Amino acid sequence: MQELTQRLTGAFGISGYEDEVRAVIREEIAGLVDELHIDAMGNLVTLRRGTGGGRRVMLAAHMDEIGAMVTYIDEQGFMRFAPVGGLYPSICLGQQVQFADGTVGSIGLDGRADRNQAPKLTDLFIDVGAGARGEVKQKPGDPAVFRQRFAAQGNAWFAPNMDDRIGCVVLIQLLRELKGKDIAHDIYGVFTTQEEVGLRGAMTSAYAVNPDVAIALDVTLTGDTPHATPAMEVYMGHGTAIKVQDAGMIGHVGLNRLLVAAAEASQVLYQMEVLTGGSTDARAMQVAREGVPASAVSVPSRYVHSPSQIVDRRDVEASVALLRSLLRGPIQL
Ligand code: CO
Ligand code: ZN
Image (cartoon, rainbow, N blue to C red; front, top):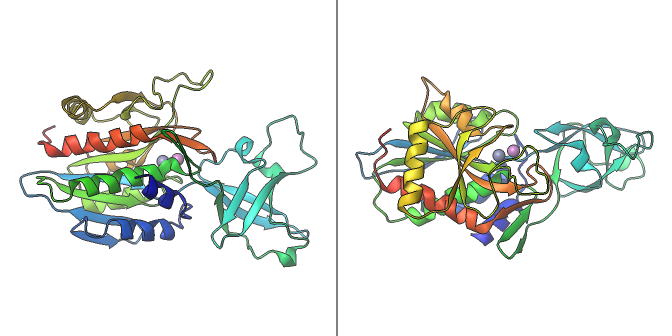
């Protein structure tokens, strides 16, 4: 699983440009699913057919990550940029970014800005080391992501895009572990696009899949760093997290009850998650068509939407184990 995580976190995949991530996933799930297609939004929609008598279960993990998009290039070749998804200026300063073609840039601060204050996004620029605009290959509209690479240290895994490559890892690993096993349910594993800019891929794929039950696989914040604000009872290394509520949805009570029972039946370490900001693909799936019972299974991650996200390998494993346990039994809501 570590190798898979390293591979997926190394792929370029800002919202709207998920092609490279999708290509890696296609390779990794070859032989694990019965059907596979790519829809108009770029979602990779897969089906692992069940033995019958089960439900249509949609599991969604988003392929895209946040980043920056060039808006303006000055005569010296410094590029101003707009956010793609939740890109926080205080986290950007001093970071390296990378464009789709591999071009590396450093993020610098406009000299007119106050260095002792948190910068605004408009105070920042990307510097690719050029001396003039003519030396810059980039054009307005070109997207870039944080450049940091994957690292493993004890149980901790570091990468700039654990949100949500680790959800993709959970889904792929689940399909690996279900191989050859009798499962009644039809499992629609959907690798979605454009989550970070408004859950757009999940919206259209949930309409097409028309699931009986839907679960998003994503990251959540933690309350275990110094004076974490807001205080939150989700801790890295303390297991997978079952979504009670976030800013976009309330997890389906019956489905959550089943998830808790599945965790307890298989002795999977879990936590109940209440997140006060942000949401996941579960929100879009929940309100698809006439409504779908939905929740999310989250991997606790420190420093989400920064180049230095950390997850705990054991929480990733617990997330896979929880889903495996759920899918083994009947899903009666
Ligand atoms: Co995110
Ligand atoms: Zn996410």
